[in-house]
Length: 126
Image (cartoon, rainbow, N blue to C red; front, top):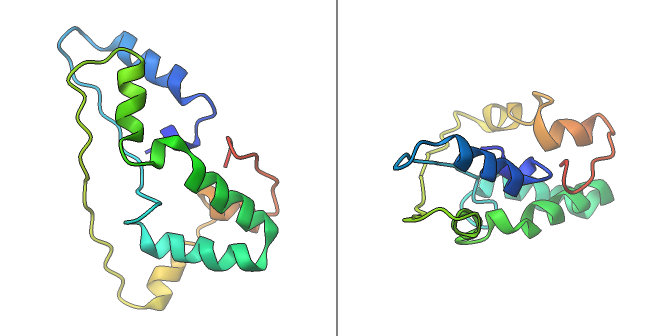
């Protein structure tokens, strides 16, 4: 759940491959910002109209090759892994209310937290 925010994800992936025993399994997951992560994409879409920092973060999220279809699989193949399979992992987001949904943005973590603190984040660090 972190490869899309690590500046040199391929280097990290290579290290994951290096420390995995022959025949072992390497796994990763990234939010599907381009389609299935609607509650958060909605936030970034609206925020990007209001704030240029949010627009930069949104554009960075959506342009990252790892969040594209087969993006992770392409990276794993590029570093030499075999039998690479990329499948969706569906997790339901059930919110009791708008306040419940909104509280996820008020925690001060991740990209929203960086923006709310006024931090300048580079696309690789966001």
